[in-house]
Length: 617
Image (cartoon, rainbow, N blue to C red; front, side):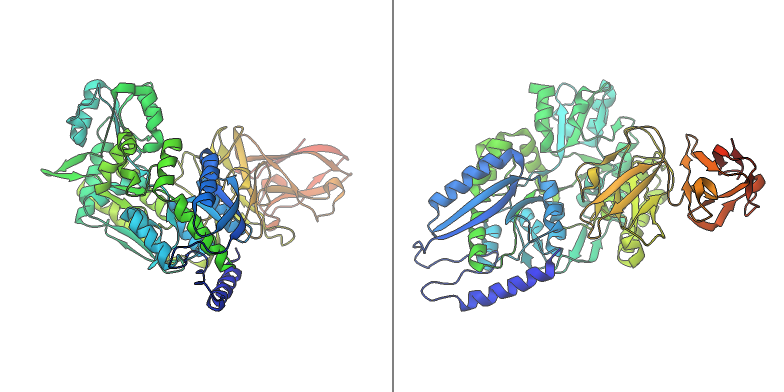
């Protein structure tokens, strides 16, 4: 990431803008724009630019940029190459090489802090910042703010959740309360789907009772503190609300609208606008939508809150201040009312623009209507530390396994509080450590399995896990520091949307080889490991100077090496980690005598790591 280089460019740009020529007001640096007071067109300003948008709005964006070129009165002509890059991937691709990245790009809200930290977003000038604040909902403005500065343009406000329900099963009155929903589900034998083992969803209970969890960043996007009140009397009420649903007997931990046609169908699914079409296709005219319900604790009703957020448009800092000003003008056009309405009509992107959100078409959408009703009880999903998601997830997971007493629930909230504060006491080694996490060993993405770097200094840095029992279809990722800011998935892609996946059953070691700049990695499942067991001796023409790795077997404890050649009187031992601190010899004795092979030939060597016994066949 070329943050320092870009900072130099921006400083140069500021100098250039101050010295800019006579006859017109100089353009601002990077992300603000200024024009002649009279509004007359200035001389032609033409630039070649690259724009990244989601594939479903590529053609629309090309049309909108063409219209911008034809209608703007500033003499701006932008020859845009529009490239389909998903909002989930854009941040990672930008941070891999900011200089080579797009001039304008779209990204999901939770990537905002990383982009500010990496120098991929420039601070907006006064005019651009005022445009953002004037035209967009307060929550989306907060989501593009770091410290006192605004760094991006809100594009959608549709990342939140609410209830879809089957009106044949749940009445309009029952959907208003958790108790009513549970009653309807029990009566119909159907389920209440709520992905509570997910920080995105369970945090809403705490927000609803007045708790807060706000991560504080400095102007560079670095996390410096957290204001969190989940561990409080109000937080205990929230934990009781979660327990009421989880222990109801009708709870299903899914957020998929497809559950409406599951073998045990859902009556209610808590999900977001991205599932509107699925829900409509299954339930048709029987589909209902509503804000989240209230729940009753000790005779008092409490409204469930939620997160909400959306997608943003960013402008890369520019060395040329005039180009930066033109890009800011385009970004304002693309995130203005007209373009947001067009994106809704084309791809159902929920508008962040306050006027666009009030259009009849938007108000007629069942998902966005329910999301709007929930917005009064929602908290903007601003920058959140990457470790927080796993910490918050553990709340509901722990509640699921407890008896629901006040003491147990208070202890769970205390454990959460301790965990978030520990984020700021991480050692350098812990922050840089890599681990494997996934639906492996029955852990359900809740346990990090450490990766150990090899002691061999030659070549690329290489890491291995301990042996893991995979089932075909298991998914996993490699991440750094126990958080999600740096993670690797399918094809070794940094912060990939897709996970790695095991293709067969068996015990394997995860081998991880990251690029030096962490822009990508190679991830493979191996039967052997640097830290596994190996044969060393005079085998295969070696002379106690080469470790011959043994393959782990189906039981996870036996290791085997086939095709081993010895001369008469050949000798060997078995050891792990290329180190003599853990070796076995004759009769399975640790640090025992060498094993002697009397006759020359080709053999199979088997080692039982639980007993130390070695067989030669």
